[in-house]
Length: 354
Image 1 (tube, rainbow, N blue to C red):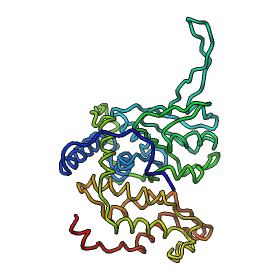
Image 2 (cartoon, rainbow, N blue to C red; image 1 turned 90 degrees about the vertical axis):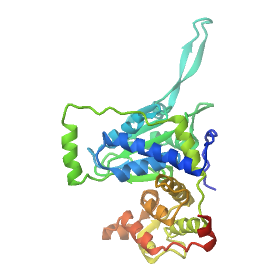
Image 3 (cartoon, rainbow, N blue to C red; image 1 turned 60 degrees about the vertical axis):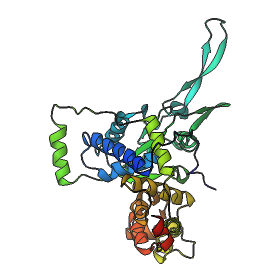
Image 4 (cartoon, one colour; image 1 turned 135 degrees about the horizontal axis):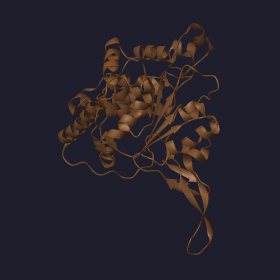
């Protein structure tokens, strides 16, 4: 049984008020965050929305884009408007696991004169961690993040140290220059809720970027949310009801990515070598819940599932040689998949419960 939906975290405070008040709370928080981020980041609305969806679902994000698209600036801006601790790690080939997690150091007690080991926390001990160019470091160091991302704690020697809550890993990756890099293993990619592609800005957005970033004025950002409020909103996401036909659609979509399944479409059997596991379905449901709340709804639709299918499945579906020779990308396959797999009909009973 996968455990993406059952990560260890403290019990968050209960929300006060009814459904309408809870929706207003999240809408207000989301609006404040988008306003503050917009003071620094021009465009990238979909990228910002997907990062915030993952944040409210206790998920981690992998941001893939060429240099100069403000990936690092976006993450640091989000950290600045939140009352959270924030650390950045620049991944390099010589980075060691202890440089991330921390290490035991020998300390002398000034009173007794005795020496003892004390754990010195690494930069991973923060609410928000930016793993910049994560594919620049060897697998041994990449693996140092695995336990922290999944279990929310770090083991050093014989001791286990809990990480602060909330805890997010936002990693960046350059898709162009692959020489001398270390591709993330599938087991670690699966720990990321979303694989977000950061695209070039539009012509109007790029003009606005040039005007806004070449002057003397520096935008002042206001804090939008505290750590306790984020935990509260994460609790709210878990409370959103999901109809049976939405669960069935998420299941069907994930199972259709697997070439060995009888229900897989012909193009999956032709172009895919490996499909998504159950964790993809868990993230489709959780992401759908968060997206529904951000849209002002307290129920999930199949459109919510379709809207986040790309960032959830992009790094969990592997293409084969046939697809590569024909220039078929993972995003192309997901496009075909969303068109091919039709959502089940909503029952009359489900309609009455809405």
